[in-house]
Image (tube, rainbow, N blue to C red; front, side, top):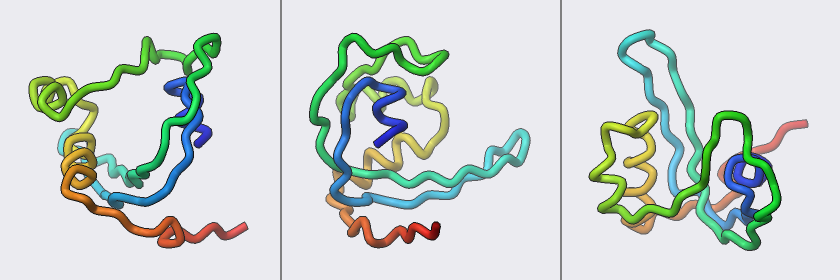
Length: 99
């Protein structure tokens, strides 16, 4: 919720997890773990500044993302979208918070 607000200025309420992904970048062998949440975009704070380096938040269709595959940060972006569109939904309780 915090990252969504900081990077998009939208308040977000997670409802499900659509996937958990691990990817290793081929060039530097850095490994990434991504959890993709689905939920509701509630309210946009149009006065809020976005995190440093983020120019804007843009809504794209699946076709738009396919056309921009070479601009994606990783293949995880398209995989998350495909899994969401395929109806993958897992309970939030899949993740455990350990204080």
